[in-house]
Length: 127
Image (tube, rainbow, N blue to C red):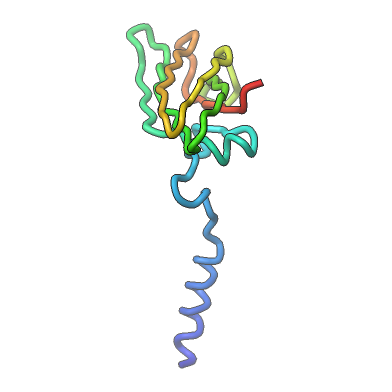
């Protein structure tokens, strides 16, 4: 019995430290997507990320933005491209998406130069 106590404590510690990423249909991977307010965190998910280099070396990013609600919503989305150190080097203009009930829209972004190494797609409620 005493031998089981450390094992039980280890399991409890590991499972106790797990974080909830949003439950069913978690909104987005946090390193590539930023859902900027509670409305988008509840209503929007982003997935099916695809990234590639264009022939001129610029980074091209494609993602799906999905409405998880049974009502029409309006969101704005943009992309911040970052260099190898994580500093933002360019940012696309905000574009507005009208998402009907449970709809999905594909968005595409391309960096302005070939210095972009990574990016963050940001989604917020329309203003």
